[in-house]
Image 1 (tube, helix red, strand yellow):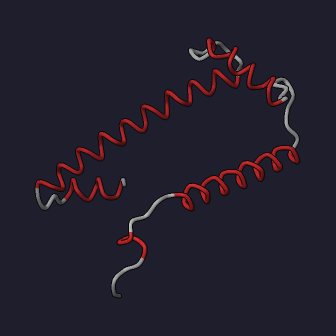
Image 2 (cartoon, helix red, strand yellow):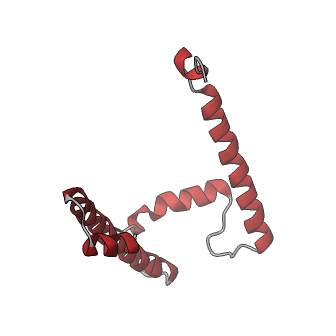
Image 3 (tube, rainbow, N blue to C red):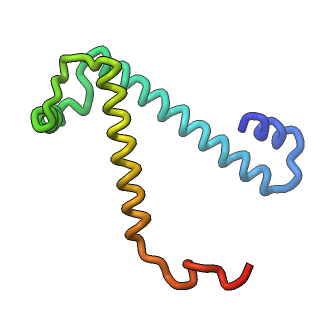
Length: 114
């Protein structure tokens, strides 16, 4: 993206390039601003400092209790790997089920001619 921005600044060929440059700069600024805010929030979470989402702690504690998670214990690499495999398989099956159950019109099923 940076190469495009520099190129557009050096040689704008029409007004569309300038409009796209302005839009790209705005998107870049928004991404940097969100990244910094998210990074600061995550730093506070990892340091166990108070955050603005702390009022949600009772809901989180209930979910921990229902799923049998100890929030104070660290995961071993084998537990983490198993959790990742289970989550990946579950999302794969869910995605497959959604695709399988989605309705299609007759025009989407087969192209008339290739």
